[in-house]
Length: 114
Length: 113
Figure 1: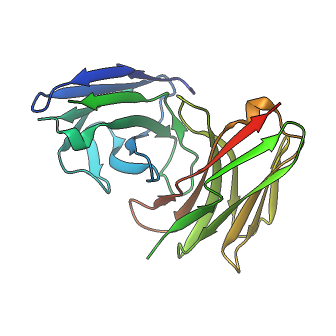
Figure 2 (figure 1 turned 180 degrees about the horizontal axis):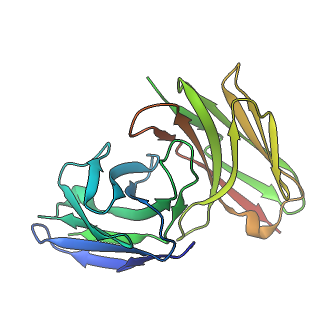
Figure 3 (figure 1 turned 45 degrees about the vertical axis):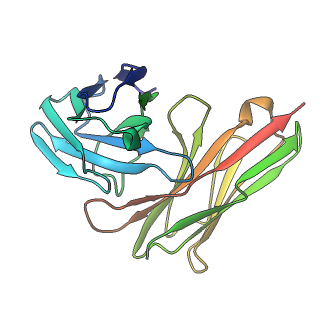
């Protein structure tokens, strides 16, 4: 998985609890992304980062926040998890912006919100 | 509206046979088109990336074609193997904008012995 580690790989939580997912890369790529994947939908971008402390919203950012304090780590936080956030979350990285650069994906985190 | 549609949704073929997956898009202005393979329980892995000027690109037994005029792409798999069982995702990139990737919902391929 291209030097990308997502943790945890599986998590079950209850509605209303905070959840943080971690993405760690060893490739020193500038760009990092968080996607969610749901049946019947293509991968949807939640947030992305183009450098340390530089982040921007994606298509489905409501209810999510991110932080990037180091090049290698990108955290996704669900402040108060809801059942609609049950999904598989993928982290991705790329050397340059997403338009012209291949993205490399992690193995995913399966999150269930009960 | 920028969209990527893939067909069929699912496909079952016998080991050793060939198959072709389709991708139609309405994304404009077009930058490039990518095919990813996603094994069950794993993240997507890039197979090919094609720009406007490229008609065909191969990666082993995988050959992708692109017709930018009709906005269609296909992924042809030759002499299928059991390990080809996966979802195949078509992704189209816009030339401009910050959030400029459009993902298809994928074709689920099952190769049976």
